[in-house]
Amino acid sequence: MSAPSQTQRQTLVVFDFDGTLTHRDSFVPFLRFAFGDRFFCRRLLRLVLPTLSFLAQRRSRDALKAELIRVFLSGVSVTWFKDAAEDYCALRWNKLMRPKALEGIAEQLKSGATVTLCSASPELLLMPFAQRLGLALIGTQLEEENGLLTGRILGSNCRRAAKIARLEAVYGSLERYHLCAFGDSQGDFELLKAAQEAYWKPFR
Image 1 (cartoon, helix red, strand yellow):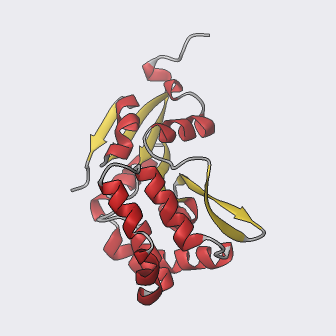
Image 2 (cartoon, helix red, strand yellow):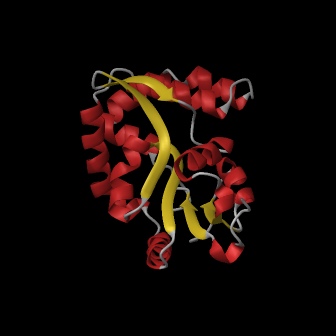
Image 3 (tube, rainbow, N blue to C red):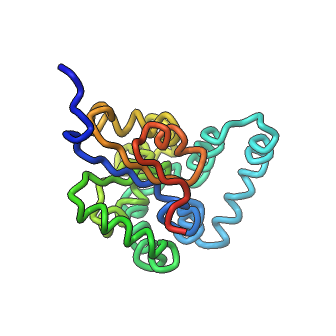
């Protein structure tokens, strides 16, 4: 069966989150918000050597993030994390979100397109934001056991080629869609390259 023509394709709109819809990163500031300054700073000291290794190009960005998650989230209650994420969304929404991005999302939803967030930030953190925006959500998944986070990523960090793989796992081949993508970093390159409409650092 041949692929549908361009005019027959459903539009799939994919928004990156951090830096694209927001003024800044969300995950590390969330950790500081959730754990408090003293705990955050103590745990951050454990990441000095991994960070230096990353800066010296001996450790990948994905490996550094995996270490960050291990250091901060091993043994953390899933319920506690979700509650903290709800509070973070409620209290930091106005400072975090770009007003023009909210307008852009509203326009895409009004158009009848299928619209989703696709982010390297943890899904558990972004759930309240996705719900408030009225969007589907694909993000980095955190492994859980008996109601606790293990400190490990389930699968892979949702960036670069992993974004394409995760999107296709949910929506099927992206060739079926007219793909419209919004991003702002190297982690979005493959997604933007695959899109018929690609928007780099929009809403600024």
